[in-house]
Image 1 (cartoon, rainbow, N blue to C red):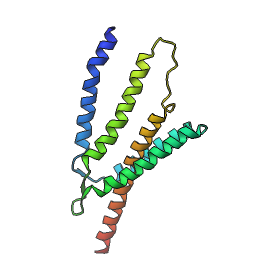
Image 2: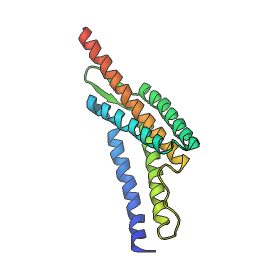
Image 3: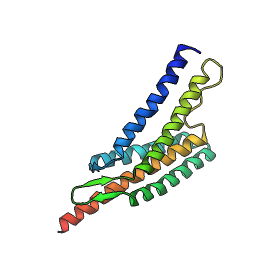
Image 4: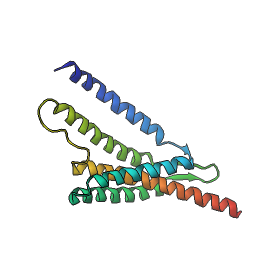
Length: 168
């Protein structure tokens, strides 16, 4: 085993732990900031559109991206129903388990691709592209669909809240 392999084996659990800790902090009660919701909606929509443009000539992979996105949207709607909204203070508390499962699934897939690229170094095996696997596209669609829908739902909640305040 090379020193690089040993370093990666030691650092990988630390990376997973740090990602989990950061994610856990993001899934707690938080103040609703509308610009963040718009940014989230834009970023996750762009993720789907960029991946979709990459696989446009491969209908099977495009279908898997669509299935993942549809499932993510459904999961996002469910997540919004489980979210606790505080209308008087503009705070919300997402269901931590739903968001953590989706994000960790996508993170695991990205880590797997990284390990695969590292393992194939120097072997003559071509480096896999990010959009070459249906599993990756499914995970990407699920993640972007969930968090994009969640951001859109938070925007909708804030608009309804503003409308109620203006009506009163």
